[in-house]
Image 1 (cartoon, helix red, strand yellow):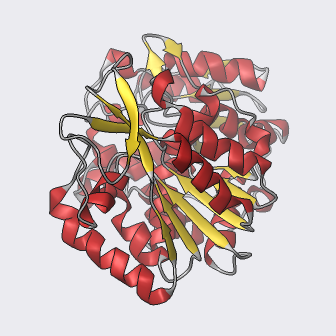
Image 2 (cartoon, one colour):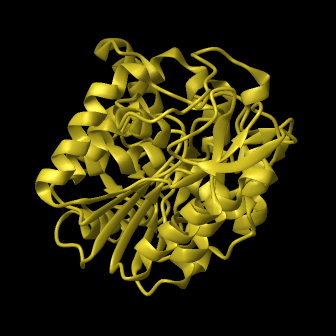
Image 3 (cartoon, helix red, strand yellow):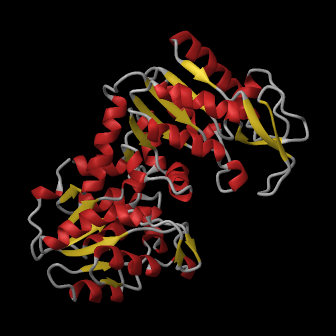
Length: 395
């Protein structure tokens, strides 16, 4: 992929596809991590005299103008972080966008409205997506792909627009790809992968691809209960994907065949209900009461998992160990994160809920080697899939 160093941007209109899909509580941004990650590339382009047009999506408005998904609050926060005003266009490719772009001077920045307000952005019809891509490309002379969290989507702004303009990868995308190559091409060993989160089905491809690459696989979170059930244990009312049991049994057998150490919880916090103030107790992971559900790994599991990370040279972590949004059930996720911070390993946090947990728990982000901005994109890369947005930048 070409980098932005290869582009002559002075005085030219540069469309930057960023990932600004941040959580909102009304108009309040509750986690600005993705905005902060986009700042270096935008600042560099503006500093080199580009007329920067930022585009991004927010939420799932499904092709309709939906006020609660407006990027207006993001524009305000982006301006604060950049230390320069950010003009905001109230539409995507309409009169406001065109006039806003036309009014940009060299070194100025604009943000256009939510790309997903336009049905062509996510259309599965190549022609419909192409029509929208044509209109978006008309706003600019150059394209920079810097929204790593969206590169696994075959969307107009990610896949089709770079085919219409001279293009390059932004600094964030370049950095993310370099990190993922370290995890897939020749990782330092022992190589440990920690997977959590709600559903084992979300991680099937990753597990299948990693079984041939890792030395140790640590499983926590809601997905652990499907593994425990596959081994014949009672999991009570815990999250369970029964349709994945045969697949998981196959993974367990394959891990054993390949000599991959599979580490599962040995105890859990079993609660009477899914609630922040739910009554709960520590029970053996192999004997969860029928009327209870596991909401976090227990103290013995935390110690076990930390021990399995202590000698690692490379660690990839994706997915919380429990319901970290509830303080009573955040201890397992905190224990894993703190073990990574204490480790001498090359540690990568795979975006999504894991990155959100690091920030919610108040842990130092610089305690990790890298925190990805793209959970889904990182996972699909590790599955060995071709990511449309990266393929478009390589052309």
